[in-house]
Length: 55
Image 1 (cartoon, rainbow, N blue to C red):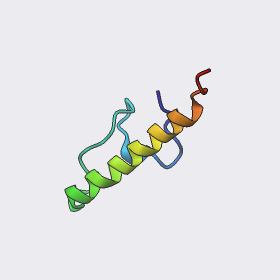
Image 2 (cartoon, helix red, strand yellow; image 1 turned 45 degrees about the horizontal axis):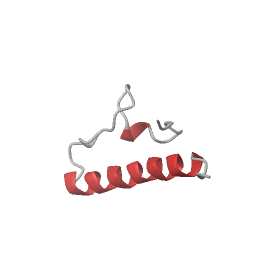
Image 3 (spheres, one colour; image 1 turned 30 degrees about the vertical axis):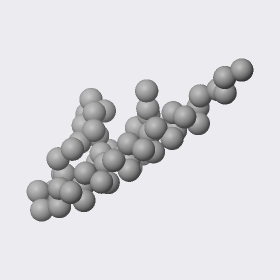
Image 4 (cartoon, one colour; image 1 turned 180 degrees about the vertical axis):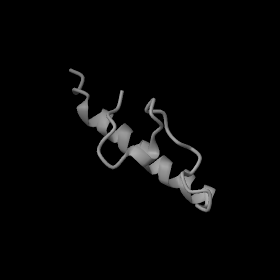
């Protein structure tokens, strides 16, 4: 589970799912897709950093 940080609102709907359609209809969809993918990678890095190393 990830936490929505301040400034991440544009990437999430109110249910915290990711917004794959750009909020601005003039925004290039391919560029938006890549921005959202980078944002998701940040979530994954946060999750990985919180995990305790296995012993």
